[in-house]
Amino acid sequence: MFGLSKSFYAKIFLLFIVTTLALYGINQLLIGQIGRSEMRKVFSERQINEHLRWGKKFTASLTDNELEKDLLKAMHVVQSNEIHIFTATPETGKIIKRIDFLIPEQFQNIKIQNLSSLDGTPDIQTALINFDGEEWNAVKLTTPKKVIVSLVNSQAADRHMEEFMLVRMRTIKQIFPFAMAMSLLAAFFAARKILAPIKRIQTSLREVDTRDLATRVPYRGEDNEFREFINVFNSMLERIERGFLQASRFSSDAAHELRTPLTIMQGYVERAINETESGSKIQMQLRMISDEIDRLSSITQKLLLLAQADALQLKIDFQIINASDMLEEIREDISLLDPPLNIRGVIQKQLLFETDRALFQQLLNNLLTNAVKYNTPNGWLDLAAWSADDKLHIRLSNPTESIDNDFAGKAFDRFSRGDSSHNRRIDGTGLGLSLCREIALAHNGKLTFDIFDQRIVTVEFTAPLKQTGKFVYKQITQ
Image (cartoon, rainbow, N blue to C red; front, side, top):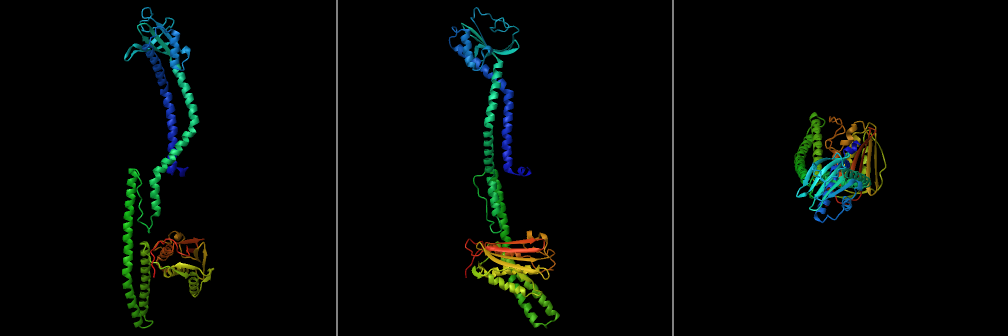
């Protein structure tokens, strides 16, 4: 129930249902309140219209019974005992002066209310008469040759109203399911129409990433409120794109500018190391400086590659290589470690993979270096590679004691390290896995990182064996 309260579709459906039921209830209440008086007005209008019709034609020859039949026919549903017709000639008619109406003397205790003449027709008078505990509508027509007075019982209108309400209730019960279905259908289409711009904005948001910040939400005849919302959203994307391009350009330019001085520094330090006394304190310090310069050079190279990937300018020279041979070579290198790791796993033969050799080599080196650095003493490394569904799968698993349990969710964040203390107990910059993911994406593949049982790390690389589709990154040919 709580989930439905958070759904706009559910709210629209509920709104339409409640509105339909509320309108039905209000309609019934209002008809019950004002319907009776309106129905009496309808009967009174029919009665007056019949007198007007009599006044326009010759009525002197019509008897009381004939006039009663005409009135019964005009009133449609009135019973004969609910109508009285009294006629007389102007010279001999007995008219009770206090009420100015032609009423026989047998009707006792007559009370007359609202006595008036019909507007524009001074020969017609109307009144509300009470006698014998009942209420009657009275209309008197005065012509040169005859005076006609008709009485219609007000209960006839009330009974007709009750019959109308009964028929209406039965009819509503029959059409209510159809009306409710139509309400739900209208709610569905209304919600779909209202949410269409939001759905398109939602789709655009899913498409926005660091590789396509040029996405914009197009206009398709939306209402003014949604047009303003789309304008704000597109303006936000423009600001994000502009800031991201500036940051990417800065990273790329900074990496380019740092490579040359670092190379020069490395050259001078190496020459100084060769010119100093072997094993001296100065030579040891120079070697420490050289190691740090190598580390800075590695960071610079990774930052440059990441900046190129962000700008969709990572250069890839695709060629067919034997991934099995490359993995076997790496496994032999790891087996030479002191103390050696227990290397296991099966590498399928002749895994021909279309890739950039240098980038693929860097991906494997980064993954295997992490597996070794974060391994346990006298630990093991499971390296497996195989092909399935025209895709290359490479999986590395190793035990660890140095990675935080929540690291899996941020493994590919830049400068995020498994050793969160950043005290260099384990060497690293936190850029290796980020670069590996970019390389995987460059091959239209993916890279996953999982931690099992809080101590087993598994990294799996998956990519098509042959790059036949549209590449995410810019390619070059030699």
